[in-house]
Length: 151
Ligand code: ZN
Image (cartoon, rainbow, N blue to C red; front, side, top):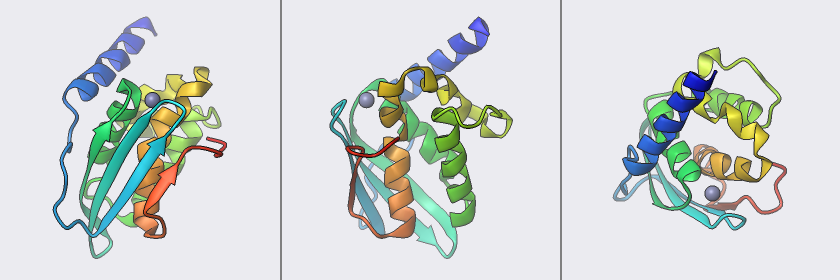
């Protein structure tokens, strides 16, 4: 388990240092601003849809290593997925980080955040980008805040 934890830690450090899809999308179809005042994490989520597929997704912003790595890994996981697939991954991620599900086999690299359940104050860091992406998928919010949410 310690080897796995070390691997997870390295993956988070790598994605924090070299975040994937860390750019703006000019005239993106959907943009959502995410704000986690508890930690000071702020990001802007960009998304383009081609029919039912997420054709492009990216983010910009600043925050702690967990929020940035989570956003980076999320864009990799969601790019090219259908809206329904993305919703499923979002729900699984939510269940994983809040400790409601302990089966991470299907989560791939996203399982690096399975240990976050032991650090309740950091759960909002890990889920910030996901809430922003979920809002972008449904196109009903231009900004989201973790303030006042259960997770
Ligand atoms: Zn944070």
